[in-house]
Length: 536
Image (cartoon, rainbow, N blue to C red; front, top):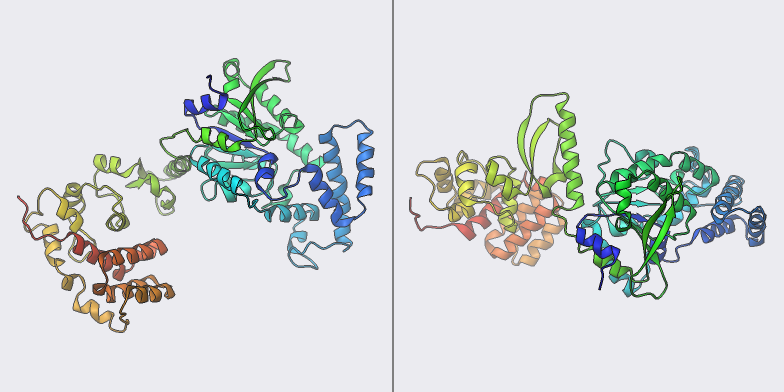
């Protein structure tokens, strides 16, 4: 059986761009209106006589206008009437100060503010079949290059790609300094987060069309790396058709040769559980006929399953962070020739601070970089993380030879895991040997002096009581002090769990807390201290 276009796309393992329309939001968001329904809802806000809306529409129909032209003109009429009713105080929006809201003083259209408020409040359908489908959709966050959408709502950034994708609202943002062409959502018709950005009236669409070349340029930039999959659009959508025709007219002959497998429409067909492949032809502005592929279905879960077969080596979000860091380095190098080397793992890109000085950074998976560049580069918090989660795969010999070779005995750093697993014991008299001897008992890790600082901290008879008190205290040092005071009454698993809780609560503050560091050192000692001599 031959494979359909989506399967061939997945086999090629190229991350696609999603071009997402209102059909997707309508599928998952409760009572999501189509364009006609949205205009009627806004009209009813200020005029209960729906017959008057029909009067406007009938007049436009008799002028021979297309559905798209009718709706943009209706939106223009409704905005004028809606805003007049608002300023005449015939209707209230209950958004901000009721008498003189700040957003009015900023020149925001009341009509668009009403729409923005409505779309912000949109919620998901409470249906099991859609919940399962959405789980598959969310998995695409690591399989999608970027998203272009004409939807105003917040469905994509809140429900599908939260925290992973940067969002850009206006066309003018498409080529901004912080745009990296991956793991990004481009809301080309505006967003509910910025009411005045919403494109709906005749004037809005005129401005949109005047600058449409920006969208075409963005699509060309993205298309050079990725196929485009349209979701939630009707092939008869006049606005989208015009964008497609303009885009196709800009492609080279070589790009057009394989367009069918790289330009795919997924359209809705009620009760269709299979993926029906249809070949269509689009005529460009120059009169050329271009074949594209349409997949008709009601089984969007299967669409997501196929796209989830794509297996990128690095997630798009990590690639974007890598681009961001590298750009910052390049920008900084213009003003300074000084550089300091520092290691940055793929998982830590978002934590990089480039504000203080330019950096020369090696980016990749830590174990690969560490093996090549050494263990003296990364921050202490990664060592504490490794003790708590055993997730860094640090080479014990390299840690002892490179990282701990100059460790002063006053440092608070867990070392016994690496000393235990190293092939040889520390050289007698070395800094690491001295450090080990200075911390080779509980009394040395939690000295009398430290105990004195904990004299007012209460003791508890159970782990549950300790953790109950820990949760009440906002200060990390005090949280860790509670655990340190009671640590000898806790088992290893309880110590690890409580330390993880603090580490995840505030990693930065944890690394400033001497009590927290001693807790982890105690854990490391209990798990890894050894007495058997290793061969020299």
